[in-house]
Structures are given as C-alpha cells and as structure tokens.
Length: 284
Image 1 (cartoon, helix red, strand yellow):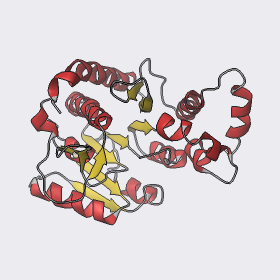
Image 2 (cartoon, rainbow, N blue to C red):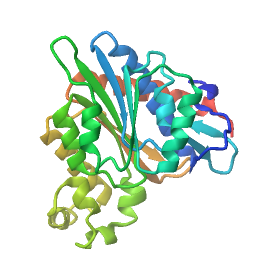
Image 3 (cartoon, rainbow, N blue to C red):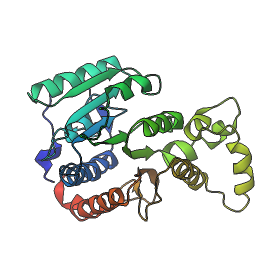
Image 4 (cartoon, rainbow, N blue to C red):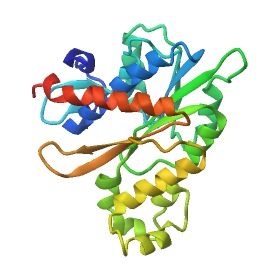
C-alpha cells in the first residue's frame, strides 16, 4: 500500500480527527479487503461490503493537515471491487459528506446509503442485502467500527442469522472499557449489557476478577464466546491489538469472525502482509 492509496485531497467536507493508530487500522483493513475481494471473486456470485459506522469517509490526522480515506472509500478502492456496498451512518452531516465524496469518484458501484443508527435500522440493512439462491451465492464482509463499546450484540446476531457474513469488529476494550469500568459496573448503565446481550455479566465479572483482574480481557473473552455460540469459528489469530506508538498502552482490538476457516486464513495473511510495511509508508 502506498501513501497515495490512503491519502485524500482536502475538500472542505466533514472529517473525523484521529490519531496515528487509526491510520494503522486502515492499513490492515485495506490489505484484508484486497485479499477478500480478490480471493472470493470466483467463489461467490455476490460479494457485499457492509459498513455499520461509515462516518464521513475521511479522517484528519491530528496535528497535521493530512486527510486519509476512511473505510468506505478504502472499500471502493480495492483492485477487485465488491459487487455491492451498504453504508450506514447516523450523523446526517457525515452521511452527506460521504455521499458527496463517493459521487466525486464517478463510480458505477451499486451503493445503498442508510441514514440512522445501525441498531435501530438493522431490518432495513438486512432488506438491502442480496438474498442468496441456488444460482447466486452471497458473502458479506461487515466492518463494525464504533468510537466506543456501543455495538449491540443483538444487531450482529440478527445480521448473522439473516445472511452469510464475516465480521471485523473494533472492540474499544482499553480506551473505553478499562477507562470506564466503574461506570459500567453501575446497573443503571446498560452499555455492556447491550454489547454482550447479557444482563448478568457483572456477577460473572465479580467471580472472574478474583483470579484475573483484566477487565478488557474479560470483555474480549465474553464477546468471543457470544460469537462462538452463534456459529462462528475460533481463529488461531483472530484479533489484532493496537497501541499508542512508542508507548506500551493498548487502545483497542480488531476482532475478526468467520464461519469458515478460509476467512481466518485471509485475515491472517492480511495482518502479516501489512505489518512489515507500516513504518515505511508514511513520513509525518
């Protein structure tokens, strides 16, 4: 991946400010999408890209004037484009910025935009996903990229039950989970209840923390167990840890889930192929 493939011109539209770790995340994402879109091209009649937290399509690297493509624009940049794209975004201004940016690409891609919260609109999202048939096999890659631990497992479960979907989920286990553990232990705060679809997780945590007091490890294990329970396989390397550059401080994990071993093979290759290049691509 070259710097030009990730950079975007300044266009005066909405952008999200982000740190260098976000850029690293997009490097891994792009390499995986390249492998996925190419490797699955001849195996599935329809390959769909679904982004539940699309944002405005670009981010501004904090402390610089560099603008980078976000996940929607990267998905549209792969060498072997997906057959369909679905972008969901609850901020109307961000969604409008994304639509304008994609319009400037003059792409012929089939695209659906869904305005609103993905958890509130999951039925609409499912209705936009192509229905498989004997003549048309459909595989969807869903990127779940929130700012915090806001995803609802019920939404992921409903999507997974309706279609064949591989998920890549950002889990803000440290930058949200560890920092706010006291708030989440308050029964009036239901964010983790919704993430794990489990109202009794606090009792389980109280038992587990006596032998392992890592809240982020607890959340990671619980979320993985939820995914295994709905048919996803346990991958030998399904997570990628992201840290603040130069510091031993974990921010978040990218967790990949598939119901087929081949999916994990692609994710592992994507992570390995992008790791050696990261320090060589950009000069800030």
